[in-house]
Length: 332
Ligand code: NDP
Image 1 (cartoon, rainbow, N blue to C red):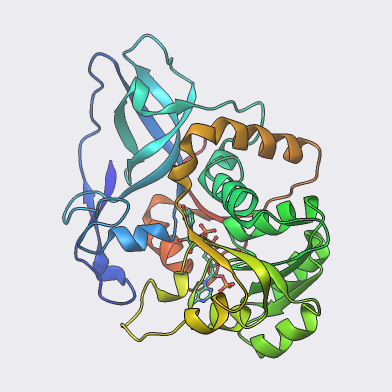
Image 2 (tube, helix red, strand yellow):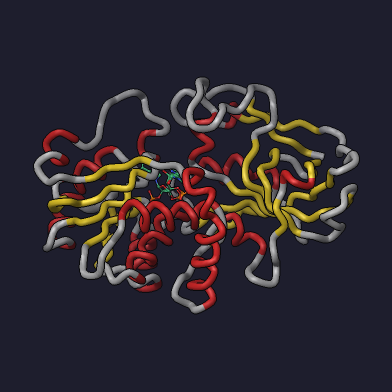
Protein backbone atom coordinates (compact mmCIF):
# COMPACT_ATOMS: atom_id res chain seq x y z
CA UNK A 1 0.00 0.00 0.00
CA UNK A 2 1.00 3.60 -0.58
CA UNK A 3 2.01 6.00 2.17
CA UNK A 4 3.15 9.66 2.23
CA UNK A 5 5.94 10.81 4.56
CA UNK A 6 7.18 14.24 5.59
CA UNK A 7 10.50 14.30 3.72
CA UNK A 8 11.73 17.72 4.84
CA UNK A 9 10.51 20.68 6.85
CA UNK A 10 9.50 23.38 4.37
CA UNK A 11 10.63 26.93 4.71
CA UNK A 12 7.95 29.16 3.23
CA UNK A 13 5.58 27.40 0.88
CA UNK A 14 5.77 23.57 0.89
CA UNK A 15 6.84 22.03 -2.44
CA UNK A 16 6.91 18.57 -4.01
CA UNK A 17 10.15 17.95 -2.06
CA UNK A 18 8.27 18.29 1.22
CA UNK A 19 6.55 14.93 0.59
CA UNK A 20 7.85 11.43 -0.12
CA UNK A 21 5.82 8.46 -1.36
CA UNK A 22 6.65 4.95 -0.10
CA UNK A 23 5.17 1.47 -0.27
CA UNK A 24 4.63 -0.44 2.97
CA UNK A 25 2.81 -3.68 3.83
CA UNK A 26 -0.82 -3.51 4.93
CA UNK A 27 -0.72 -3.92 8.74
CA UNK A 28 -2.69 -6.60 10.61
CA UNK A 29 -5.02 -5.69 13.45
CA UNK A 30 -4.20 -7.18 16.84
CA UNK A 31 -6.76 -7.89 19.52
CA UNK A 32 -8.90 -4.79 20.18
CA UNK A 33 -7.87 -3.24 16.87
CA UNK A 34 -9.47 -2.73 13.47
CA UNK A 35 -8.09 -2.45 9.93
CA UNK A 36 -9.47 0.62 8.17
CA UNK A 37 -9.54 1.29 4.43
CA UNK A 38 -9.10 5.01 3.78
CA UNK A 39 -12.01 6.42 1.74
CA UNK A 40 -11.88 10.20 2.25
CA UNK A 41 -9.05 12.20 3.69
CA UNK A 42 -9.10 15.79 4.90
CA UNK A 43 -6.37 18.31 4.12
CA UNK A 44 -6.33 21.30 6.46
CA UNK A 45 -4.40 24.56 6.83
CA UNK A 46 -3.24 23.67 10.38
CA UNK A 47 -1.13 20.85 8.90
CA UNK A 48 1.28 23.51 7.64
CA UNK A 49 2.07 24.43 11.25
CA UNK A 50 2.75 20.78 12.10
CA UNK A 51 5.40 20.66 9.38
CA UNK A 52 7.51 23.13 11.39
CA UNK A 53 9.77 22.16 14.21
CA UNK A 54 8.78 23.27 17.68
CA UNK A 55 5.67 22.69 19.70
CA UNK A 56 2.46 24.51 18.95
CA UNK A 57 -0.96 23.39 20.18
CA UNK A 58 -0.38 20.11 18.34
CA UNK A 59 2.95 18.28 18.19
CA UNK A 60 4.94 18.63 14.94
CA UNK A 61 4.88 15.85 12.35
CA UNK A 62 8.06 13.77 12.55
CA UNK A 63 10.50 13.71 9.67
CA UNK A 64 10.38 10.53 7.56
CA UNK A 65 7.16 9.49 9.27
CA UNK A 66 3.71 9.49 7.67
CA UNK A 67 1.77 12.74 7.76
CA UNK A 68 -1.58 12.25 9.48
CA UNK A 69 -4.95 13.93 9.70
CA UNK A 70 -8.68 13.44 9.54
CA UNK A 71 -9.76 10.30 7.66
CA UNK A 72 -13.10 8.66 7.01
CA UNK A 73 -12.75 4.97 6.30
CA UNK A 74 -14.44 1.61 6.25
CA UNK A 75 -13.58 -1.27 8.54
CA UNK A 76 -12.32 -4.21 6.52
CA UNK A 77 -11.18 -6.39 9.41
CA UNK A 78 -12.36 -6.17 13.01
CA UNK A 79 -10.63 -7.74 15.97
CA UNK A 80 -12.52 -6.14 18.81
CA UNK A 81 -15.93 -6.27 20.39
CA UNK A 82 -17.53 -2.99 19.31
CA UNK A 83 -16.91 -2.31 15.64
CA UNK A 84 -17.57 -4.71 12.81
CA UNK A 85 -16.61 -5.17 9.19
CA UNK A 86 -18.43 -2.64 6.97
CA UNK A 87 -18.78 0.03 9.68
CA UNK A 88 -17.71 3.56 8.76
CA UNK A 89 -15.43 5.43 11.14
CA UNK A 90 -13.60 8.74 11.46
CA UNK A 91 -10.23 9.20 13.08
CA UNK A 92 -6.87 10.86 13.02
CA UNK A 93 -4.93 8.47 10.83
CA UNK A 94 -1.78 8.40 8.68
CA UNK A 95 -1.74 9.34 5.00
CA UNK A 96 -1.89 5.75 3.76
CA UNK A 97 -4.42 3.52 2.05
CA UNK A 98 -4.97 1.20 5.03
CA UNK A 99 -4.43 1.84 8.74
CA UNK A 100 -4.71 -0.09 11.94
CA UNK A 101 -6.18 1.61 14.99
CA UNK A 102 -7.51 0.68 18.41
CA UNK A 103 -11.30 0.48 18.48
CA UNK A 104 -11.43 3.43 20.84
CA UNK A 105 -9.10 5.58 18.74
CA UNK A 106 -11.74 5.98 16.02
CA UNK A 107 -15.39 6.99 16.19
CA UNK A 108 -18.22 5.31 14.30
CA UNK A 109 -20.23 7.56 12.00
CA UNK A 110 -23.76 7.14 10.71
CA UNK A 111 -23.96 7.11 6.88
CA UNK A 112 -27.76 7.44 7.01
CA UNK A 113 -27.59 10.97 8.50
CA UNK A 114 -25.26 12.54 5.94
CA UNK A 115 -22.77 11.51 3.25
CA UNK A 116 -19.76 10.03 5.06
CA UNK A 117 -17.35 12.77 3.97
CA UNK A 118 -19.53 15.43 5.66
CA UNK A 119 -18.07 14.21 8.96
CA UNK A 120 -14.78 15.77 7.84
CA UNK A 121 -16.50 19.07 7.07
CA UNK A 122 -19.76 20.55 8.23
CA UNK A 123 -20.48 17.80 10.77
CA UNK A 124 -16.86 17.55 11.87
CA UNK A 125 -13.94 19.70 12.90
CA UNK A 126 -14.53 22.67 10.54
CA UNK A 127 -18.24 22.87 11.37
CA UNK A 128 -17.55 22.75 15.10
CA UNK A 129 -14.85 25.39 14.74
CA UNK A 130 -17.36 27.71 13.05
CA UNK A 131 -20.06 26.93 15.61
CA UNK A 132 -18.07 27.51 18.81
CA UNK A 133 -15.87 30.32 17.53
CA UNK A 134 -18.80 32.35 16.23
CA UNK A 135 -21.46 31.60 18.81
CA UNK A 136 -19.37 31.36 22.00
CA UNK A 137 -16.77 34.03 21.28
CA UNK A 138 -18.31 36.21 18.55
CA UNK A 139 -21.82 36.14 20.09
CA UNK A 140 -23.57 37.88 17.16
CA UNK A 141 -26.83 39.61 17.94
CA UNK A 142 -29.73 40.34 15.62
CA UNK A 143 -29.04 43.36 13.42
CA UNK A 144 -25.29 43.40 14.10
CA UNK A 145 -22.70 43.27 11.32
CA UNK A 146 -20.49 40.17 11.12
CA UNK A 147 -17.46 40.11 8.83
CA UNK A 148 -15.78 36.78 8.06
CA UNK A 149 -12.50 36.34 6.18
CA UNK A 150 -11.66 33.10 4.37
CA UNK A 151 -15.40 33.26 3.81
CA UNK A 152 -15.80 30.63 1.06
CA UNK A 153 -13.75 27.96 2.84
CA UNK A 154 -14.81 25.09 5.06
CA UNK A 155 -15.02 27.12 8.27
CA UNK A 156 -15.87 30.56 6.84
CA UNK A 157 -18.83 29.41 4.75
CA UNK A 158 -20.47 27.90 7.85
CA UNK A 159 -19.65 30.96 10.00
CA UNK A 160 -21.49 33.26 7.61
CA UNK A 161 -24.57 31.05 7.47
CA UNK A 162 -24.69 30.70 11.26
CA UNK A 163 -24.46 34.49 11.56
CA UNK A 164 -27.42 34.79 9.14
CA UNK A 165 -29.38 32.29 11.26
CA UNK A 166 -28.71 34.59 14.24
CA UNK A 167 -30.14 37.54 12.30
CA UNK A 168 -26.92 39.41 11.58
CA UNK A 169 -25.85 41.32 8.48
CA UNK A 170 -23.05 39.22 6.98
CA UNK A 171 -20.11 40.34 4.87
CA UNK A 172 -17.60 37.83 3.52
CA UNK A 173 -14.08 38.32 2.18
CA UNK A 174 -12.71 35.78 -0.30
CA UNK A 175 -10.33 35.46 -3.23
CA UNK A 176 -12.30 35.00 -6.49
CA UNK A 177 -15.41 36.28 -8.25
CA UNK A 178 -16.81 32.74 -8.35
CA UNK A 179 -16.54 32.62 -4.55
CA UNK A 180 -18.15 36.05 -4.21
CA UNK A 181 -21.16 34.94 -6.30
CA UNK A 182 -21.42 31.72 -4.30
CA UNK A 183 -21.49 33.63 -1.00
CA UNK A 184 -24.16 36.06 -2.13
CA UNK A 185 -26.32 33.95 -4.44
CA UNK A 186 -26.11 30.53 -2.78
CA UNK A 187 -25.44 31.25 0.88
CA UNK A 188 -27.35 34.52 1.25
CA UNK A 189 -24.49 36.73 2.44
CA UNK A 190 -25.47 40.42 2.36
CA UNK A 191 -22.22 41.43 0.67
CA UNK A 192 -18.90 39.89 -0.30
CA UNK A 193 -15.53 41.35 -1.23
CA UNK A 194 -12.87 39.93 -3.53
CA UNK A 195 -9.63 40.84 -1.75
CA UNK A 196 -7.58 40.03 -4.85
CA UNK A 197 -9.29 42.55 -7.13
CA UNK A 198 -10.88 45.12 -4.79
CA UNK A 199 -9.56 47.70 -2.35
CA UNK A 200 -10.60 45.87 0.81
CA UNK A 201 -10.69 48.94 3.06
CA UNK A 202 -12.92 50.90 0.72
CA UNK A 203 -15.17 47.99 -0.15
CA UNK A 204 -15.61 47.20 3.55
CA UNK A 205 -16.64 50.75 4.33
CA UNK A 206 -19.35 50.49 1.70
CA UNK A 207 -20.46 47.02 2.79
CA UNK A 208 -20.51 47.89 6.50
CA UNK A 209 -22.21 51.29 6.82
CA UNK A 210 -22.83 50.62 10.53
CA UNK A 211 -19.31 49.38 11.29
CA UNK A 212 -18.30 45.86 12.33
CA UNK A 213 -19.53 44.15 15.52
CA UNK A 214 -18.00 40.70 15.01
CA UNK A 215 -14.91 39.90 12.95
CA UNK A 216 -14.37 36.14 12.55
CA UNK A 217 -10.74 36.05 11.52
CA UNK A 218 -9.48 33.12 9.44
CA UNK A 219 -6.63 34.83 7.62
CA UNK A 220 -4.80 37.54 9.63
CA UNK A 221 -2.41 39.92 7.88
CA UNK A 222 -3.47 42.89 5.78
CA UNK A 223 -7.10 41.81 5.40
CA UNK A 224 -7.49 41.81 9.18
CA UNK A 225 -5.76 45.17 9.42
CA UNK A 226 -8.41 46.62 7.12
CA UNK A 227 -11.30 45.09 9.09
CA UNK A 228 -9.94 46.29 12.45
CA UNK A 229 -10.26 49.90 11.29
CA UNK A 230 -14.04 49.53 11.19
CA UNK A 231 -14.62 47.85 14.55
CA UNK A 232 -17.46 49.20 16.67
CA UNK A 233 -17.47 49.76 20.40
CA UNK A 234 -17.44 46.37 22.21
CA UNK A 235 -16.82 44.41 19.00
CA UNK A 236 -15.69 40.78 19.33
CA UNK A 237 -12.98 39.03 17.31
CA UNK A 238 -12.77 35.22 17.40
CA UNK A 239 -9.21 34.62 16.15
CA UNK A 240 -9.60 31.29 14.40
CA UNK A 241 -6.66 31.22 11.99
CA UNK A 242 -4.09 33.28 10.13
CA UNK A 243 -3.57 31.42 6.88
CA UNK A 244 -2.03 34.46 5.17
CA UNK A 245 0.95 34.09 7.53
CA UNK A 246 1.44 30.31 7.58
CA UNK A 247 4.00 30.35 4.73
CA UNK A 248 5.36 33.70 5.82
CA UNK A 249 8.90 34.85 5.27
CA UNK A 250 8.86 36.60 8.63
CA UNK A 251 7.68 39.97 7.36
CA UNK A 252 5.40 41.47 9.99
CA UNK A 253 2.04 42.46 8.55
CA UNK A 254 -1.26 42.68 10.36
CA UNK A 255 -3.55 44.76 12.48
CA UNK A 256 -2.15 47.53 14.72
CA UNK A 257 -3.70 46.21 17.90
CA UNK A 258 -3.04 49.26 20.12
CA UNK A 259 -4.83 51.79 17.97
CA UNK A 260 -7.94 49.76 17.19
CA UNK A 261 -8.72 47.57 20.19
CA UNK A 262 -8.36 49.95 23.12
CA UNK A 263 -10.35 52.87 21.84
CA UNK A 264 -13.34 50.65 21.05
CA UNK A 265 -13.05 48.24 24.01
CA UNK A 266 -12.81 45.31 21.60
CA UNK A 267 -12.59 41.71 22.78
CA UNK A 268 -10.15 39.57 20.77
CA UNK A 269 -9.85 35.89 21.66
CA UNK A 270 -7.84 33.13 20.07
CA UNK A 271 -9.11 29.57 20.40
CA UNK A 272 -8.68 26.03 19.19
CA UNK A 273 -11.73 23.91 18.56
CA UNK A 274 -10.45 21.37 21.09
CA UNK A 275 -11.15 23.93 23.84
CA UNK A 276 -14.80 23.00 23.35
CA UNK A 277 -14.41 19.21 23.21
CA UNK A 278 -16.76 18.63 26.13
CA UNK A 279 -19.55 20.21 24.03
CA UNK A 280 -18.87 18.58 20.65
CA UNK A 281 -22.08 16.53 20.79
CA UNK A 282 -24.11 19.73 21.32
CA UNK A 283 -22.39 21.37 18.33
CA UNK A 284 -22.86 18.35 16.07
CA UNK A 285 -26.52 18.07 17.05
CA UNK A 286 -27.22 21.75 16.32
CA UNK A 287 -25.34 21.74 13.01
CA UNK A 288 -27.03 18.47 11.99
CA UNK A 289 -30.43 19.97 12.81
CA UNK A 290 -29.90 23.11 10.72
CA UNK A 291 -28.52 20.98 7.89
CA UNK A 292 -31.62 18.77 7.92
CA UNK A 293 -33.90 21.82 7.94
CA UNK A 294 -32.06 23.17 4.89
CA UNK A 295 -30.88 26.25 6.79
CA UNK A 296 -27.21 25.30 6.33
CA UNK A 297 -25.63 24.40 3.00
CA UNK A 298 -22.15 23.17 2.30
CA UNK A 299 -19.83 22.75 -0.63
CA UNK A 300 -16.93 20.35 -1.13
CA UNK A 301 -13.99 20.35 -3.49
CA UNK A 302 -12.96 16.75 -4.00
CA UNK A 303 -9.62 15.78 -5.52
CA UNK A 304 -9.52 12.14 -6.59
CA UNK A 305 -6.63 9.76 -5.94
CA UNK A 306 -4.21 9.07 -3.13
CA UNK A 307 -1.26 10.39 -5.14
CA UNK A 308 -2.92 13.82 -5.33
CA UNK A 309 -3.05 14.48 -1.57
CA UNK A 310 -0.08 16.93 -1.57
CA UNK A 311 -1.57 18.86 -4.49
CA UNK A 312 -4.90 19.15 -2.66
CA UNK A 313 -3.11 20.36 0.47
CA UNK A 314 -1.07 22.96 -1.43
CA UNK A 315 -4.25 24.20 -3.14
CA UNK A 316 -5.49 25.50 0.23
CA UNK A 317 -2.83 28.20 0.06
CA UNK A 318 -3.84 29.14 -3.50
CA UNK A 319 -7.54 29.13 -2.74
CA UNK A 320 -8.36 26.40 -5.28
CA UNK A 321 -11.03 25.04 -2.93
CA UNK A 322 -14.64 26.17 -2.60
CA UNK A 323 -15.91 24.88 0.75
CA UNK A 324 -14.19 21.89 2.28
CA UNK A 325 -11.16 20.44 0.50
CA UNK A 326 -11.18 16.63 0.53
CA UNK A 327 -9.32 13.84 -1.19
CA UNK A 328 -11.27 10.79 -2.29
CA UNK A 329 -8.95 7.81 -1.97
CA UNK A 330 -11.37 4.93 -2.63
CA UNK A 331 -15.05 4.13 -3.15
CA UNK A 332 -16.95 2.63 -0.21
P1 NDP B 1 -10.37 26.81 3.99
O1 NDP B 1 -11.33 25.81 3.48
O2 NDP B 1 -10.87 28.18 4.32
O3 NDP B 1 -9.16 26.89 2.98
C1 NDP B 1 -8.19 27.87 3.08
C2 NDP B 1 -8.61 29.14 2.31
O4 NDP B 1 -7.79 30.21 2.75
C3 NDP B 1 -8.37 29.07 0.82
O5 NDP B 1 -9.45 28.51 0.15
C4 NDP B 1 -8.13 30.53 0.42
O6 NDP B 1 -9.33 31.11 -0.06
C5 NDP B 1 -7.75 31.20 1.74
N1 NDP B 1 -6.37 31.75 1.67
C6 NDP B 1 -5.25 31.10 1.32
N2 NDP B 1 -4.18 31.93 1.38
C7 NDP B 1 -4.68 33.14 1.76
C8 NDP B 1 -4.09 34.42 1.98
N3 NDP B 1 -2.77 34.62 1.83
N4 NDP B 1 -4.89 35.44 2.35
C9 NDP B 1 -6.22 35.26 2.51
N5 NDP B 1 -6.83 34.08 2.32
C10 NDP B 1 -6.07 33.03 1.95
O7 NDP B 1 -9.69 26.24 5.32
P2 NDP B 1 -10.41 25.93 6.69
O8 NDP B 1 -11.80 26.40 6.64
O9 NDP B 1 -10.13 24.55 7.06
O10 NDP B 1 -9.60 26.87 7.71
C11 NDP B 1 -9.81 28.28 7.71
C12 NDP B 1 -8.95 28.91 8.81
O11 NDP B 1 -9.37 28.41 10.07
C13 NDP B 1 -7.47 28.58 8.69
O12 NDP B 1 -6.71 29.71 9.07
C14 NDP B 1 -7.28 27.47 9.69
O13 NDP B 1 -5.97 27.39 10.17
C15 NDP B 1 -8.27 27.89 10.78
N6 NDP B 1 -8.75 26.80 11.62
C16 NDP B 1 -8.65 26.97 12.97
C17 NDP B 1 -9.13 26.03 13.82
C18 NDP B 1 -9.04 26.27 15.29
O14 NDP B 1 -9.31 25.36 16.07
N7 NDP B 1 -8.68 27.47 15.72
C19 NDP B 1 -9.72 24.78 13.33
C20 NDP B 1 -9.87 24.73 11.89
C21 NDP B 1 -9.38 25.71 11.08
P3 NDP B 1 -9.33 32.46 -0.96
O15 NDP B 1 -9.63 32.05 -2.35
O16 NDP B 1 -10.42 33.26 -0.32
O17 NDP B 1 -7.97 33.09 -0.81
